[in-house]
Image (cartoon, rainbow, N blue to C red; front, side):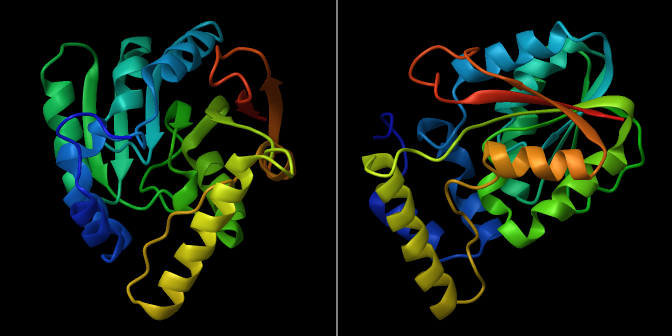
Length: 237
């Protein structure tokens, strides 16, 4: 499941028993050796699709983690890219990794993706692998936050999908994991917020359209095994 040198079961258990922020601080040095990191094959396609949509002055990556998406989107930016994350440990890993390569300016800000501390200065906002940290009740707040930091005509780019088929093992594995997390968070504080099958295509599209976005759902852009996913490009009206 993990690459050589990845976290042990004991380390994962310690992370899961911590708060969301502290858990990712602990996992940060080994995060890129886990399957939780968004694969480069998916990020490459997302960046190519975004490049085709026109020039980018500044971009913002929400829940940037160790900077995986930033590495692909940074070359598209004329003036710079910002990574926002609640985990100081993840931001430090991203800073080190992106500092090893050249390109447009890369800044790193510790903060909440539900309340990013920026004005409407970005041409593109991205988010990959971080929707599981947003509870369903907070998804409208997320969409409003994205709209607030985008310039008119700016784009929100992310990958999502539809629910797996009812008999799919993936569906029941996700539901089982979510059930365990609900029990864990009911019994232990502070909570560790991480759930699967969140911000799926239908709900994401409805929320974005309600909050002033034109939504382009791009199917069949990812190669297997990511082909069930679609790329969403939502443009601020």
